[in-house]
Length: 339
Image 1 (tube, one colour):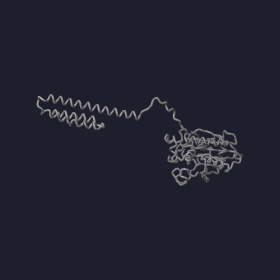
Image 2: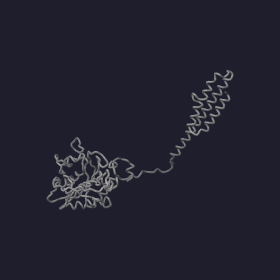
Image 3: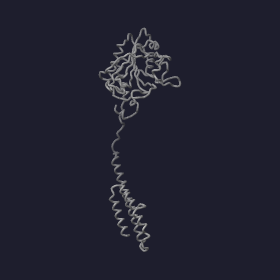
Image 4: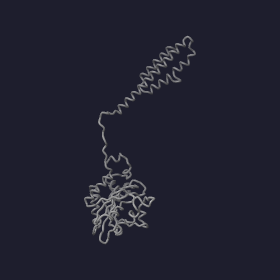
C-alpha cells in the first residue's frame, strides 16, 4: 500500500503539472481527491492494514492528499493568472496618449433640408416665420375656412388638450399670424413640427414636420405657383424630378391641387413608402381662398395669393432614400451618424 500511495501521488502531481486546461485539473481532483476517488478508496482499506503499519500509511495518505491539493491550487491559480494576462492584453490602453476629445456631431437630416429650403426661399424674397405648436381652434381651423361643422375637420385626427387648445395639425396657423402682422405684399414660409393622431407605419407618424408657404400680391396666378414649386424641387433634389399636378380639395385654397412626385425610393415601380402607387403626395397647394384672405384682414378684391404645404419629412425621405419614416425620430445613433 505504501508503494501504491507513492505511485498515485507521483502520477497525480505529474498530471496536474501537464494539464492544459482548468477542466483537466478538475478531472484529476475528482479522480484522486473526490468522495469516490482513489485516496478515499485507500482510506477505506485502512481497517485491513496491520496495526503496526497504520501510522505510517496514515501519514503517507495525509501527505499525498496535502501535496496533491497544493499542486491543484497552484495550477488553478496559474490558469487564472494566464486568463487575466490575456484580458489585460486585449483591453490594453496607453494612458500616456492624449484623450480623443469631443466627438464631432452632425445636423439631423430634417434640420439640414429645412435650412436648405429656408436659404432658397430667403433668396427669393420670402420671410421665415415661426409659431407655437399649441394652437387655438380658431387659428388651426376657423381662420383657414374650416368652421366647426365643416367635414374637413374629420380629415385630420387632432390631439385636443383639456383647456380647449390643441396640438397644431399643420403649420398653416403661422400663415394666419403672418397675414395679420406682415405688410402687403408678403412672401413667407413657416417650417415646423405638427401632430396628428394617426396610426404609425413606414410612411406615417403622429409627429412629423411640414413647411407652409404663402405669397400674397396683386394678380397672383397658378403660373406663379407652379414656377415657385418647380424652383423649390430643383433646388432640393439637384436634378430634374417627375411631378404631376392633379385637382385636390383643401378648404383654404380655391382652386386646390395635389403636386405629387414620382417616388425616388422605387423609381415609380411601387414600394411601402408610396403605398405601391409609384407616387408620393408632396405638395398640396392652390390659390388662397378669398375667405382666408378676408379672415386675415386682407381684401380679396385687391389682393390674391397662392399657398402650399410641403411634407418636409417625406421630402427628407425622398432626398436620402429613407424607406421608413420612424427612423427619423427613433434616436438610433447608427442611423443618425450616416448624415
